[in-house]
Length: 510
Image (cartoon, rainbow, N blue to C red):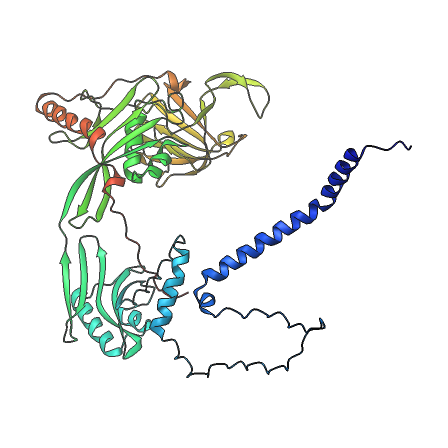
């Protein structure tokens, strides 16, 4: 007998082997069946396909007695008849096409709609133009340069001649024009109005009436005072800082002279210190400034104190500056003769920077940029003006019988400074230079008492006057008003109207 598994075990192993071989086939058949079922369901769901007659089932061939299939004559297949072509569909109308576009746009509802382009504004019918008179120009010539018709030019010229009454317009005078485009004459603009304002309070205007005739008019503006303030900080020389902030040069010079009696510009004045200036401007009824402003009051805030000066005119007197207590700021002499930024050498013994030996430095040196104005420390008479050895260009002023001041190393003298001339305190007598024995631009300043040189910075002088009585009462009332306006008055920037952007102006002539 052979060693073989029992029959029961053999059949069980064969069945599992067969199942393993046919398993992929069964899976494939199941997948095909699912696909066919889905196809049938989709055909039945289509109403057109469901309406078709069912396809005839193929019949089983007949079998003869001998077991062979019987052959029957074949019949011709029924021809497929296509429906006759009807008339062509009508073309899509524009409205239908827009409807279709709207339907398709529905798919992009989430897409933001593009903004419609705004139509361009029409060209203006009239426009403004500013021209400037040059040497030898007339109003008629000016209009001819922009191709104004000759008849209009002559009318306008005649009207202006009647307004000016033989007065001449200055070179550089601006002429304001309002012009109109004429479709019939595109290259010849029509002048609707022309105005010239030689003075802020006076304006000459020529306008065109509807009948084409031009008429002239002189307009006078009322002028009234206006109080404004200017605030600034010192960056560089104090006077230049004020002008940059908007203080008129004349008003800033008055402020500097008023401060110079009380402030040591070299030792007390530092960069970044703030100041406020109160001005009285003259303005027309339409807001044009006829006078940039005279100084009414001002204050300079130093590290340890604030110096305030106030303009006042006593009865039967002249304008002057006083402190809030009513004391005149004017001393016999200025503390320093210039807005100096640095003392480069003090009074006393030192080694001479050029000669190289020790000697008395008989004055004070103020370092300053070339061209800085030098002020007379007090009223007096010029007793010397010219070259003076190592002093270079030199000026000496005699103030009293025993007091004199001297100024050396100037680059040039001030207007009218010559021997014998009388000068007032604060008058410009020269400008900083580096003439003579000098290593750089500076002012050498000396103070003489009884013919001897003394330290200028050690000299002290009392106030000259104080307001009393009715003048004192009027001053204190005015001082309270000015001190409040130094804090509350509108600034120059607030009173200056913003200019509206103007259309491009035609160039006068290259």
